[in-house]
Image (tube, rainbow, N blue to C red; front, side, top):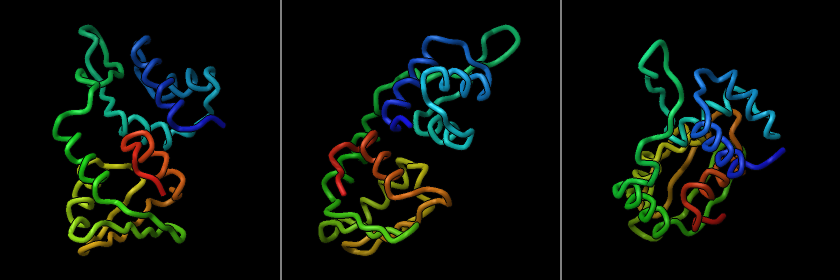
Length: 156
């Protein structure tokens, strides 16, 4: 199975080059590219890429990437908060503890909420620690892949 970053790249290319109107078609095209994923995984990927549906002007809708594919300035500032603040990440099952620099946990926790990482169900921040709960079926590796694609400098 290929990794998420290459799957996301393939997904963006498919959406840019084709008028795709449903997830079944998208799943078929991804499989032809060597990516066998579930509908739930595809939905999370589409959410992460901020893919929406736009009208074709005639009879239906098709998937499209945001007009401004570049990360917004505001989102960039949240990514910087995460990069600056995180010291370490440790997990036990679906629970994670993110250690931050003193006083950074609230800003990092807020940034993670705003960035809407699909792997995170919720979090609670203190002064230098954030308690993270992963969604059912998500793993530490899934979250780290998400960090790698959206916030590359964050390491375990």
